[in-house]
Length: 588
View 1 (cartoon, one colour):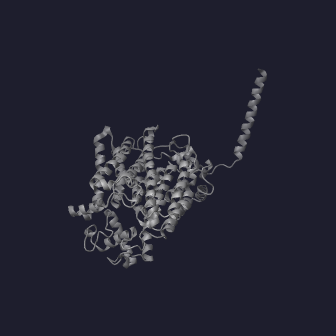
View 2 (cartoon, helix red, strand yellow):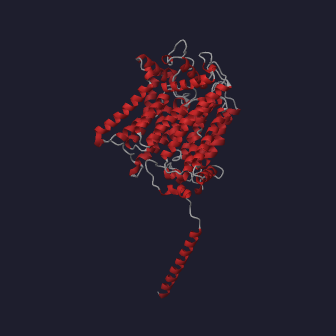
View 3 (cartoon, rainbow, N blue to C red):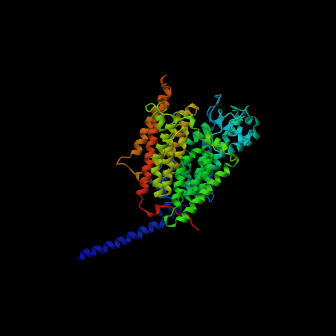
């Protein structure tokens, strides 16, 4: 026992000596700077509903986890960190640098052909947007949506809400000042001079600079408020390089960045519990592009859920009525020039919802187009019956997600419900364009740091689903460049993340996400190769376009099911009370 006691004393003395040695070594090491402490502060924070994926998102962008590739985001992250920590103004310089990089990529796409370039007599969406400027500049407001001698609705008649018309008028004023011939009534059809193209392309860039990109950065700061500055910029770079949106707006030519940007600003207000501002902004988005109706049930249910308090029913009803008056007032203000008579309002509504155009246009990757070779709806049912069927299936598709959102109205559930509901509209509703896949992409992109594999796959399949349209527009080169040379290299590290970093629940021991990516790359390569080298049979000229639509539809259906399942998991699988409900609005 004495020997053992002596041994214990010797061990204690040796342990104290080791501790003094370790303390000496620690004191000789350089102490972490304030910038280092700032970048590590997230590891000590607790998740909450306001930023449910903050801790995971921070780790997703850390290079000390063996996560980022040295040639990819790892290098970007190191450069961002170095510049942000060396000067007090480093963050602002970096933000300007990322903005410039995002705009440069857009400019590289914009130098390629637009839709319908030189292909008269109807040309394409580029001519439609230019023609709307021509109409709104030269005709009085009461003729904008009516078929008159000077406004032939068969030639790209205005079929977007009034806010789009006002936007077209403002751009037409600038265009007429710069090049009057580009806005001449009747004589400017198919006007495609280099100077007019430069003006038209610049208007889309301005919409990105002043609406979409600021909204995107503000959303990242709002949904992930405790990310360090360099990590926010890295996420901003990733989310700002969405192949589908860039190719459609800056290649094909449209202004989706306006409606999506306003919607994103509305989501920023949701993140800050500014519900009146959110209602006003979303009403403006609806009045710019009617396809934002895909989001309308989600905003309605979320705002209803966060304002409803069963213990204070009267105050809850008053708050909900207040939101209703705000929405009605916003709509009335936008529609004021068209409130002259019932016939005028009816004509505008008729233009916004052209039921007579049919079930879908071109080869869109939704259920009805994918099943068209087997399910001959147009041959067996009239238009009214098809419309009723689409409405019923669409309702069945998004009602479960709305019920879960009402039960647990968290910020993450709000975004998941936006994704599944808009996908339900895209897959099952009546008269869908292939470009409306951009609507489900917006809320899905907002969840990039929460479910990286799922969101990245969604982006890649969405861009692929648009390939027949992009090929027809002569945009194959920018498509391949933005997908394979820009987007994939930047997000490659996200696809090789450790399992614990991705919050998508697993279905088994195998990493299905990585297996899917490898399979996706192989199948996409085969389909692109077949379409490029082997012409389709003369009896089936749309074979490849239909194959792309069907293959994409299968994956969109999978994404829809996963988004509903993830919302159910977040609704009933949440264990912390702080994730249950957001802050209730004040009642005084």
